[in-house]
Length: 265
Ligand SMILES: NC(=O)c1ccc[n+]([C@@H]2O[C@H](COP(=O)([O-])OP(=O)(O)OC[C@H]3O[C@@H](n4cnc5c(N)ncnc54)[C@H](OP(=O)(O)O)[C@@H]3O)[C@@H](O)[C@H]2O)c1
Image 1 (cartoon, helix red, strand yellow):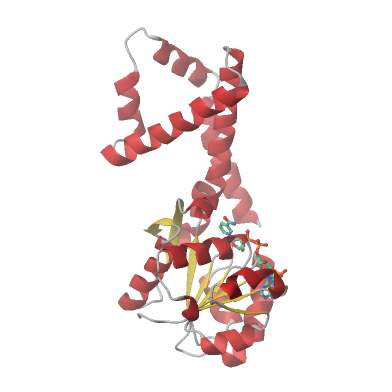
Image 2 (cartoon, rainbow, N blue to C red):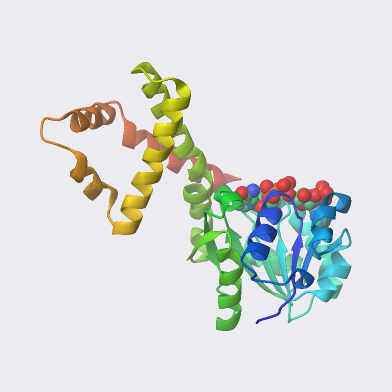
């Protein structure tokens, strides 16, 4: 799979994050990278770096082996149907669009290419995404190659397709849930005496430290909580007060409500 030509169809925020990661990590040579959007003039900076920039998806698909669809979900069907007559059994199509199934990708693309799904989160912009991948249709070489592509955005987890919507809630929407928790921490910090900038700085690093602590030691969160709670101390009193007010319950309910929404729509 080395030296395959990769096309990003729909080079907006996520597409650009992919391009940056692929170039920074030298995963692909600029000459093997094709990028499209209708307003292709706005991609001139990528042309200056040696990428092929175009607004012609068909011309680009003809010259590429792997197509990453980074358009909005409502554009996927039209984009793929327009490409049907140039797509072959040798193409791999990877969609990052929420809610578009493998069966739909197969159908919209005319049935020939192998199809896969990827669900990054906005951490991709700083190469700290957790990307969930569904690669069941690909052979081992292709899986390794696609894994390498998305690895430039951060870490990957391979999941079955029936968990892709759950992955969207926990990983992609999850960023917003964590940020709302952080905002509340900042508000609490201001009430107990910090200016907002200092409270923000403390909260950001506290969350970063907590995440690193449990990831690097492979701890369950509760095991790490045990490390910082003294009997009769202020941490356990604060935690229990939060639980009396429904902290964990409200987070779990929010995740389930989001999931029900994605299932409905
Ligand atoms: N951003 C994230 O962190 C993130 C995370 C997970 C999943 N996603 C998914 O990734 C996809 C892209 O998200 P985004 O935030 O990058 O959106 P975005 O910034 O709006 O990018 C979409 C791009 O698609 C282009 N486009 C639209 N129709 C096109 C067509 N027919 N041919 C070629 N290009 C076309 C648009 O440019 P023109 O208008 O110039 O054509 C635009 O630049 C979405 O499906 C989203 O659900 C994003």
